[in-house]
Length: 121
Image (cartoon, rainbow, N blue to C red; front, side):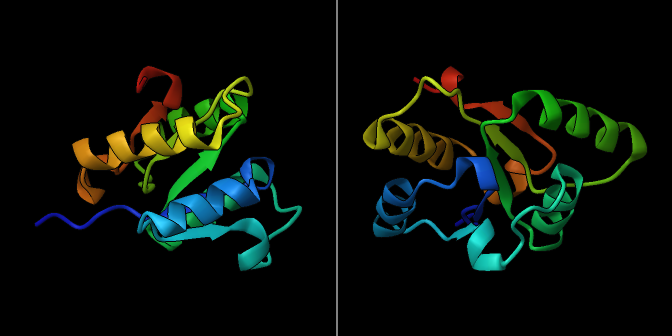
């Protein structure tokens, strides 16, 4: 059975109720504050997530889309990036979409992917 991916929530996406709900559903979740990486740059957050082999979760589509493209062009690997839209404010809805992604994509399939949560309705 493929290994499920692990999550790393950047500073903007850390949402306590969501983190708790995902942990209850068996997700391996790490937040910026848990890793003591507050106020690190977006590049540093992606580097950390990659070093921990985690999928980075963020609201920051602009910065992370550029970082993703640059990393791919440079041949650098990351564990994946999932972008949430600011309008998605229901814990249940975000959780359902992440469960759909986890059911569809393995840890290996998430590698170097940039996924928009809005596409997983």
